[in-house]
Image (cartoon, rainbow, N blue to C red; front, side):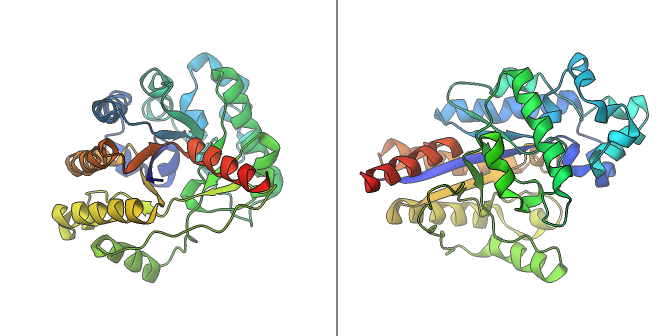
Length: 311
């Protein structure tokens, strides 16, 4: 038995930063496509698979948008991001909101195309259920248009809620993350974890039949931007991940390395560190100590193990 590494990417363009559009000026269609190509080329070098989880609106072509009234009718814009998008001028809508060509780059048999919502609506339990259903219905429509099967889900902002509704749309599992508390104290604690080279990997509770599977997902790959760039040495990030990989191997656990592709635009030095860490993972894989899997692979492994226990 070996350890596992999942590489999951939260793919959202400007949808996830609708309230910080000033920070997205470099998120042009060309820049985003180049970034996805760069990431996929790196994965190809090491023969790695990955889970690309898309805000599904991001995948729509111009002629496909007509199937979604929320882009054209203000009273149908049920999320904050849709309201912001609809308030923009045509020039402001031209870059970073829709990138259907990205599927030509990442939709490979080795990769999983997963779902990260439709418009990056938070799945907070305080949000009305009908709005969550609207979001999931639109995800389902995009999947049909694109001939995709969304089987795992990554919650926007890592705010986990309304899991019971995911089951109605054939989802099998979701990336689990510790509670996302939005306060200064929590942010500082979270940041300090970047210096913790002895972090433990959580072992998840046994799978309960009929429940969606919790996919490990507590490890954000350090984005070399602003404070994270100025204060966290590259050597510390590399050592932290080297030790996490070793722990996954030694304890036969699953480690999920996740980030946003656009992190490589706002923090271009992130790529060099990512390249080195994936190189270390490739050595462990080639030694037969580490499996590189997708989120859906993880779900299948858990289901198979559960079936063996039942039988």
